[in-house]
Image (cartoon, rainbow, N blue to C red):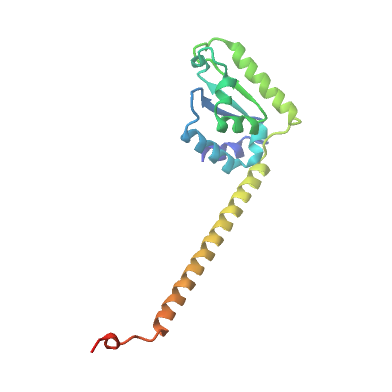
Length: 174
């Protein structure tokens, strides 16, 4: 939980989260799971402070990132959640400071849109509290279902005990 520790140590809190994804023709299950974990840890408020950073932009080969995003419902949803904020880095142009400058400008715009506020420990704690409450609700529901199943099983056993035993001989033909 290095991420969680970082939030507490970055007082008053981070102004931006970069969700780093590699440009490729699919949004992997592993990447989807990582996003779900981030949402679970930080809550829905995370998206207000997030920019998607696509790496290996050099592999797009003339296709725009918009085409890649538009062909994947999960990526569309993620980009929409993040307020349409994303940036593409060309890994082969490491000396090109323009792409880093553009990323920093996007971060500055987002911070300005957020009124200069940052993601706070309070927001994290709210997300953690909501997650805990949901887990407790699920546990209570599972316990209720377990009790109901046990009750049904006890009633079935009781009915079987109360049912008169049939004498095997009563079915004999003489």
